[in-house]
Amino acid sequence: MSKTVGRSKSKKNNKITTKLGMVLVVSCLILLAVVVLYKAQSLKAQKESLQVQAAELQEQLDSAKEDYKKLEEREKYMQTDEYVEDVARSQLGLIYPDEIVVKPEE
Image 1 (cartoon, helix red, strand yellow):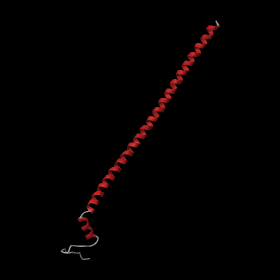
Image 2 (cartoon, helix red, strand yellow):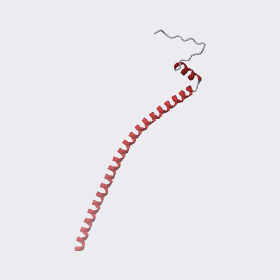
Image 3 (cartoon, one colour):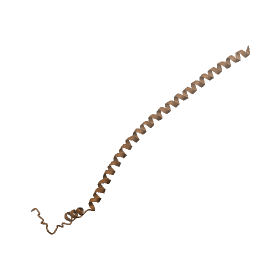
Image 4 (spheres, helix red, strand yellow):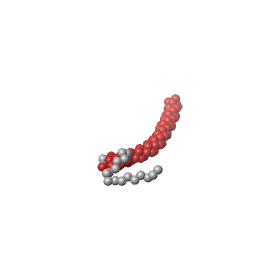
């Protein structure tokens, strides 16, 4: 009879151990799921922040390209005779020999 009683306790211990193991495994899986969901939310927020930053940088790039085009156009203009003539007239006060300068009275 002692063998039967011993086996009965052993079976009960095995069932308790098995249930405890299952609870432990399920708890670990739930904890892992919570951690993964938290990290996913964190990464989603970081992604949105980076998308906003990328949009701002794209705007800056577009603005810089526009400024570059304006500078190229200005450079081309500065290499023309028209620019030289404009500078000579506005800054140096030069005129063509056949021109008459009319200044308003002060």
